[in-house]
Length: 348
Image (cartoon, rainbow, N blue to C red; front, top):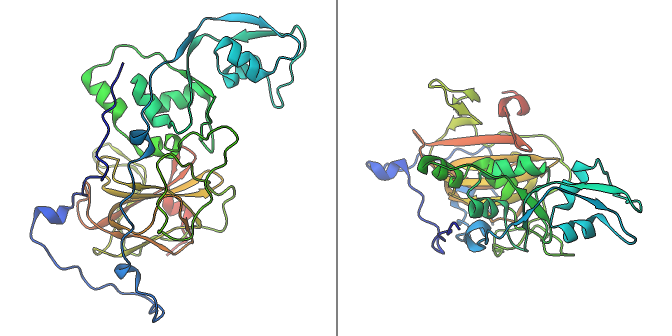
C-alpha cells in the first residue's frame, strides 16, 4: 500500500527568481484606459485568499480495488448494466465497451455479456483521479487511457474504474508517477460527485472559497473567441524547444505585476503551484473541452469556482517557478491536447 503524504494546510510560498537576487522595483504598468474612480486598477486589486489544499491531498484514497476474473454473464430478469457491474465488480463502462453496448444500454433476457478481467476501484464521493492514481502508483494518464475517459473528466461516486497493472517501478519512475503536470489537473483534478449531486454553480467574485471536495461546474459551451492574456514579446514558442524538450504553450516577456487577463469567458478550475517549474498557476475552463493555463504568475486574484469574463484580470505576472525572467507561460488545451495558442489568438 502506498501512503499518501498530505501537504500542509497552507501552500508553500511561490519561489521567485527575484528572490534570488537584488530586489528591483517593478516598472510602472501602462494601461490603455483608466479604471472607474471607485475601482482600483488590476495591479492594485487584493490577492485572493490562499486556496485550501487541493482535493487530491485533502481526500486520500485507499487502494482497495477488487480483482475481477474474465467471465461470461447471462442477463436475468430485471438486470441493468449498473446492476451487472455491481454484481460482478467490473465497471459498467468497461462492460459496455467489451460488448459494444451504447446508450441507453438496453439489455435482453439471456443476453451473453463478456465481463473483462482487471482491477476495479470503486470511486467514493470527493475522490479525484489524481489521488486514485497515486494510491495505486500508476500515472493518471494511463488510467484515462484504460477507461477511455473524456470530457468533462468528472468521476461519480459508485463508478468503477479499471486500474492498469503496472510492472515494478524504479525510484525515478515512481517519482514521475507522483509528479503532477497540467494534463493531470485538467483531467483528474475534480472531486467525484456524490450520487444525485450537482456541481457547484460558479461564483462572480473571489470572496467564496470552496472546500476541496466541491466539484465545480464548467461551462458546457465555448462562447466567443480567445484574446491575448498580456501584451509582450514571445520569448518561447509552442512545439519542440532548442534543447529537444516540447513546449506545450508560449512564454511572453512582461514586466512584473502586469495584469494577466482571462483569454475567454470561463470558470476557474485550479489555482496554486502544484506543477514543478510553472510556479503560480491559474487554470480556466471555457466549455467544449477548452482550457487555458497561466503560469509563472506572482499573485493570484481569483478562486477555484469563480466565473470570469474575457479580459478580466485573473493574476499579476511574476517570475515564479523556473521562469528565466519576468514572463507569462500561456497554454490552450482542447481536452487533453495542447494547442498552439498563436493559431487561436487574433493577429497582432
